[in-house]
Image (cartoon, rainbow, N blue to C red):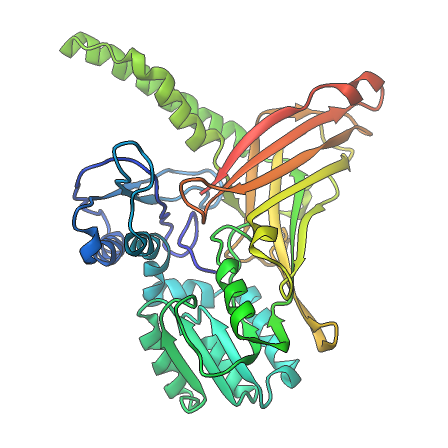
Length: 452
């Protein structure tokens, strides 16, 4: 997975927005935050094409009730012209994407977070070593190798050659790891983006850990698709081979806590408006609506990272998207639309919101199936969890229901206009009452969310 977000690793969030801003200097309260800022900012500002532009780095902290749901976020903002229209050169766009997305992967502390996820590690390890026929004497491409562990495993499983592509200076550590494990003669680490890399040959296998929150956040699968279309042999296999996105209605106490945080922030704003008027003679109330919308998005409409217990699921989970990694296109994963109809469980009375997660499978391909199918799931579990967790989308207010009622509606997911690695979501929903036929024709309520 290639993003530092919400709970992920450091808990920082990086994204671009089309605002016209000046230079600010942020002094971090932690050395780690400052280190990430320096790495990301220098990668952007060092480019000659960046000299006319300004960089703004902003960080914020938020306390949470359960787990680490909305940790600190860091935003890299680029001036995109007086009219707001994109006027950034391709070199700057690439530099901004590096600053927003790739640069944090250059740190071993981040890699360690992912390498310590034993659900993730066990699934990839088992997929390789329980299906060595796909690796023995084969040419393998590892897209986004990071520390290089997947490339090392591929070599240990008998690969004749492994091309390990990494966009960041983590490539240096991947070379060290390959040498330290005696496979440097097999593993060739190439530093650069997969879109720019040229290989000397086609490959038999593409392996990659490309999954983001709710599977498609980060849009890293775009790069895997590029690699597949350019470098995979017609008989080649993808690891993982298949992916699915799941959603379910849930119960949770988080909604009350988030609403209280939002109300506290608005009360503080009201005090600020009054104080500014009394002390300085300036009426700030004209900005209240804008501030309210800003805070509503942050506290009430932002997806929350969480580790849910299965008992919090109050309706049968349903698949909203599934695809074959061998044939899926960028268009297939750039947006999602799915309708749903779920019978709600007895014993509860309110729907707090929705939860989303994913699973991937290592099946090989139809003509060359895996000897052993391996599943990696991020579903709610009472025993294990992953660093992906689940994404929670809270409804304000919660929905009341009775046993036998049906929850129906649709889900639309698109990429953010300001940053293609982030997601906008729209849930349309209504409760069809078991004792009221007219409820089946009631208008759908609309809830918008942002997975940033």
